[in-house]
Image 1 (cartoon, rainbow, N blue to C red):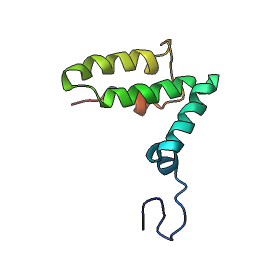
Image 2: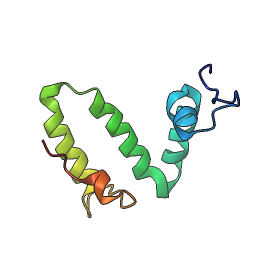
Image 3: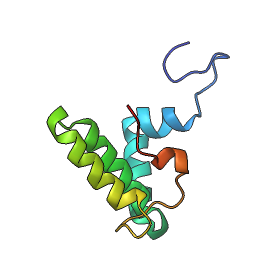
Length: 93
């Protein structure tokens, strides 16, 4: 199937396709998150994760600590309490 189309040939309506892989969809969704007070922390987390993915290897450990304290720790400045314990667990290994 061509990009953006499901196996039956219909338009792909998945979140990943519309809000992550499509530049305009991604921009509009990010603006929606940033513009809604109840979703602003989720928008900030998304932006920080993308920045983290661009970090040099030497910077990653410190960047991960900042992410954990800001978004994953109760009482953090932008705590994302909607994330599961598995999503916020410190990776092992």
